[in-house]
Image (tube, rainbow, N blue to C red):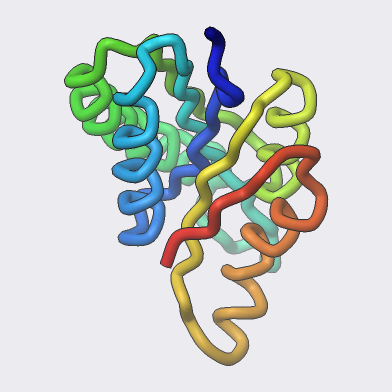
Length: 144
């Protein structure tokens, strides 16, 4: 009998809460090797405030390199599972990119971290999990 959940997404930004979300997804997926885990990392575009800012291309390349290093760590961790796993590094605004990925790829379940920050930081950083929670067409587990 096929399970109710066959494809999960973990929104991953290397924060402590997203690492916990990945751990939870792996635990759940280990119960059924038919479950596919997609780990999605999103590189947010830089906003230019000054013509004297450091080259955007250089910043982008550095962020891509950092993302590739994180991806290797994630892939190594995922290799302990017998499930099919994939990792993605996407460009754009994280909330919108994650929601679109989930919609386009018929995802059944989303794991996303919430850093639990307060004040202005919560408004900015918590906005990704809040957006995904309200826009997704499947269950979302927000992990603290």
